Length: 198
View 1: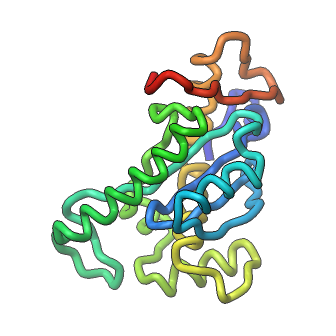
View 2 (view 1 turned 180 degrees about the vertical axis):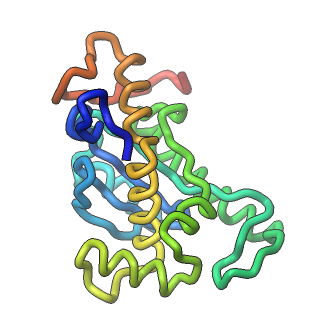
């Protein structure tokens, strides 16, 4: 975990709300290192409802971490290989749908942390979907019927927080917004984008 010069974990100095995403449909919401909730959003309406019902768009220092893959990935089960074009298109479409929801909400795409799937799997020591679900249920005392996609989103968030990526993004966001300091709790609301991309 990244630390400040006084030895405190950075999330204690730089509070944040994190939305971690498994682009197929999973999401998890964090208050600092504490998991608030996780679930699935398989439609545009469900993604928008999740963003608005959890009120994360008005959260202090909102950070988004999203899983991504490369053309050559370690498939679950430990066997490596190239992903098929159909699989790559499907994963890209899922990312595109989440980016569209975030853009419609006014969140800047350059403030999204990209988490490579093989990295969080290696750090957590999991590769099979059952292992990811089991890990998430044990680590966060969740019911055993947790979905694979929600478990993946939790793993993405845990990795992003644990490797210091979230703390670095909080600082980047603070520098990008005039009048927002990194000296403690503040309210930060993403600007609503009404005229296309920034």
